[in-house]
Image: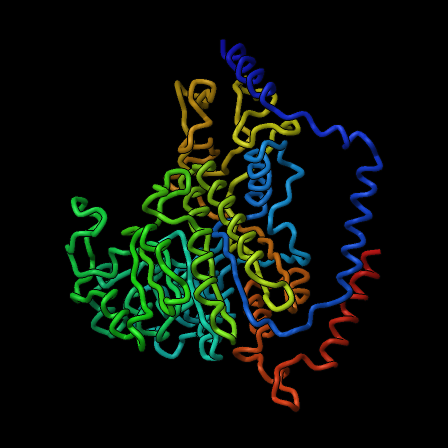
Length: 527
């Protein structure tokens, strides 16, 4: 009976698979494609050594290499293609590197320590943001003297506009490392802090968002509840006590934010999509958008009339930030990729990744590669995988072509090493043919039962284009990334090499020569 059910499901899947394109049968197709790629590679000898006026960092939280590949296939299949041959927007970037993600105290990293690395330029302990490895998680008295500043602050100090956009709460691990110095990533508001930490003078992350770096130009994401006094009903969900304000200090941080603005007429606080889309960027210098009490809703479940998409947030952000003639720094996080994986919901995770790739494409159309450095990377991976010798064009959320040769049951191509998808029925693995494994919240099967699936420890990809992008070229420590971005933009520690006799910023001939020689030597080694 089990085998019959599997055969029926497989027939349905095979009938929906796209046959591979006819042109691929011709060897000249592959030869011509390779020659075109070779020409583009040779063209990379013409290095872009200009100063980066703008820097954009896209961070796919939990977007390991297997997730990138599966996202590529999904995006193609959503467009009616087999999927494998699809080119993501990030795939088009000419330079690719690998980043080692470990924390100073962890082989398999968390999002806080990694955020400190790729934003502040130093490796740190897990669970801490914006502090070096001398700071101990949860010990407030180890904060002072161990603070480290981020590239967002370096950019602001250089006169650039700066912004943070995320699909998580705005005081979550990734965005918080851009502005906060905190020994515990979970201190979202003072409600989550122990009394001794408050007594010793430590501040919660939401408070630091509005006080550490004055006048961050654009802030968008979730996290509304952490900005309002305890038990204040939420503006969108007034009947839900879980959405109520959480602050014990009585502060309304949205009011604090507005009161601190030098030009209140050019500052806007919005909490829904309609308000956001009604804004005229030319009239707005400062924008605070908080669209959910906690994290924003998964794209597959998003209310498109009340919650903006990541692309819409990025578009508005860039239209505001680009008004500054000195340029801007923008951090964009596709944060719920990570959440989907933790919950074992691969479909949610991959659709979040597709949305981030769409946003990358939109950002590319709004900037010039000549003066904008764009970096796409991840903080860490997950124990997510897909395999099973699937055929070309097999639905990414579908079955492997053959059942297990041990228990004779079908299995989906996507699996997790651990997580909530572990399930035994009558003493053996659940038969996936008895459930709808295509639904949005299906829990992909896992080898080890855990309430929450874990991160993976392998290196993550770094995609780069624009000025000095070639400096991201091999296997690097993760904390190297912001140093490259700062060097390209002539900010932070990296300003001296940009000063010419005329006072304008340009890279010296010696650096251009070194960069050219490195590129030539690399090509010689490859060929």
